[in-house]
Amino acid sequence: MADPNVSLSMPEIATQHMGGDHDTCYNDLGTKQVIVGICAMEKKSRSKPMREILTRLEEFEYIHAIVFPEDVILNEPVENWPICDCLISFHSKGFPLDKAVAYSNLVRPFIINDLHMQYDIQDRRKVYSILQQEGIELPRFAILDRDSLETKCNDDLVEGDDHVEVKGEVFNKPFVEKPVSAEDHNIYIYYPTSAGGGSQRLFRKIGSRSSVYSPESRIRKTGSYIYEDFMPTDGTDVKVYTVGPDYAHAEARKSPALDGKVERDSEGKEIRYPVILNNAEKLIARQVCLAFKQTVCGFDLLRANGKSYVCDVNGFSFVKNSMKYYDDCAKILGNMILRELAPQLHIPWSMPFQLDDPPIVPTTFGKMMELRCVVAVIRHGDRTPKQKMKMEVKHPKFFEIFEKYDGFKDSHVKLKKPKQLQEVLDISRYLLGEIEQKPDPEIEEKKSKLEQLKAVLEMYGHFSGINRKVQLKYQPKGRPRRSSSDDDSPREPSLVLILKWGGELTPAGRIQAEELGRVFRCMYPGGQGEYAGTQGLGLLRLHSTFRHDLKIYASDEGRVQMTAAAFAKGLLALEGELTPILVQMVKSANTNGLLDNDHDSRDRKSVV
Picture 1 (cartoon, rainbow, N blue to C red):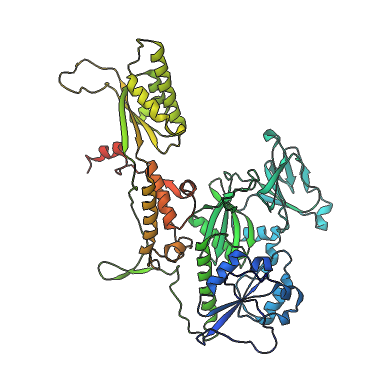
Picture 2 (picture 1 turned 120 degrees about the vertical axis):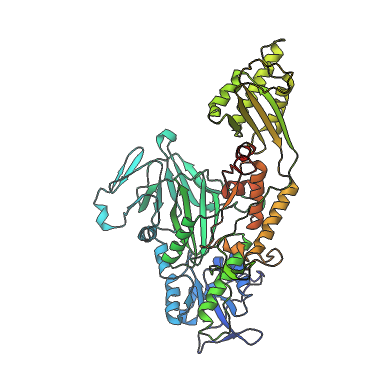
């Protein structure tokens, strides 16, 4: 039974039984309500995500939620279960799915997640078969079915040192071995001998671990398994959560295959990173939701080799610790339930604006038109002063690095990467060392300029590539004459080294960008209000729908990129540090021709 100490405005534990007529439920105003029944194991139905969502669902005037007690689910016949108009029921360990199906057949409620398909979700073979039928990309796989009498006598498996052959399909290590039962989370990844061999053994999270390394390189000899190619994903998995076919929330986590250590924040919660799904991935989410007939559905995506692959479908699952998702989920489910049942129960509910409806907005010339696209060009936030130092350089080492990065192709080169800046720093240290050793060296570079170059590049103790850069420009005739009195004799080719630093986004600039992101939501239909104060309005929900395709581009300037990340954080109500947001969500754009790029803008002045 439920813990009597739990007190989060939880919908009531149902006590009514199926004895006689359907008891109609009314709100305080005497209006009929839809009864939504939650039929699941107590660990799930009383979990924080479920409580958060049901609390929001109860805010609907015409919805009343009841939770079936676990004792009733396990021990009472379905004839004694509470009556409901809409059923949210899902399988987990120990749940009697057969009884839920029998209850559904008896009462005929509106079903949120199809119960019969939940049998298929428990078998990875059936999951993969359904995904194949839908044309959804999967890792290459083969099934070794030791449970079937037909395969016991066949030589379906050949194991080598660095590969396994299943039914004629060869899988070179690294490959993945998954039990066919989706309830079995003991998934093994086998490594090649060239990488040290052994295997990584994945399991359900225990404390701060989700996998361990084992020196064992031989595959398991009992049980049925799916063997598939290991997909290189740069150490992250994408978790996708649908609420109906037109909404998908996504976040990334460190792959359990990486080192088995679960990344947790200061509050002990697993760290997740924000993800924007592209249109192809939103289509996959729609297909998964419809194919498995699971309105609320979680599945795993692997981004590898320029494609997205589905590697697991979990059925009913919730996002943890996301207020935005809780708002979205409750609103979408509430509207879905009332749209289906309000007419049948003669409830006076009017359908609100749906996020996938075309947004119709007033225009400046008086007509109402469909909003098709919003394009915003945004300047970076408050920055520290920009600083610049120029020097003429002639030493062969500078020409070597200029040639190494194709400087002669365009007569200039920009160096921002840590490796490139380290090379310039090494040259400055070398030349200063030469000057110290030889009183009158044949080095034309000014010592003071080299010392400044070295000092700036040594700031912060490391290179991030986001707060300093070096430009080299070719001067085929050397430094131009500065006055008529300068020597008019021919000069040797040289380079102009331009060092730029400073101009970094300040803490105030970050706050400005986040605030602008929050304000920006208000221009979308449904997003008006005090910075769309109720999270989930307008753009917040729209960006997770199938219709919406959000792209964020930024120039390669550090202050611009960090502004874009801070703006995205405010726009989409994200949490955490800016670096993961920058890496996951902001694309570097070619801004040639814009004012960011002095060199190219000067070239185009004559064209304008």
